[in-house]
Image (cartoon, rainbow, N blue to C red; front, side):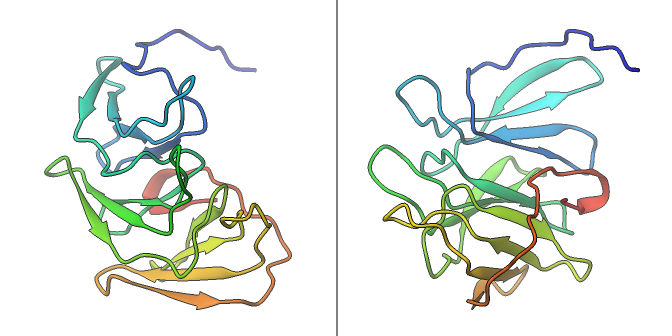
Length: 171
């Protein structure tokens, strides 16, 4: 059995957000929703001192997003929604600079999709809901450096979770 102990609270209340363990051991959280808003804010947790600090914000709010840690140590914020639309757009966070930038968009908007980092470093994003709230069977691959996402519309039958762990692996 384990023991839970309190640590510092985030600056912004949120749910449905992403959390990614960065290569330096800190944790980046971003996206999600709070009450009636979809914040663009992002925060970094430092486990050495138990505190959260705000970092640069996303370009758009992303509730119901998915995310991945790239082999370079950068982080993808993929899809999601704001109060007016679902997103096909993708943003990249660079922990070295604390800056978000735009990556290539997916071919379809996705909310509540799941993402995994493959052994070759490609990012696989699967399923989710499209703009009409229809469940998707399609999948797309993102290749770091190319800035491109490619589609594969074959059904994916096995579920993939959205938990990011050490060494750039997502399960």
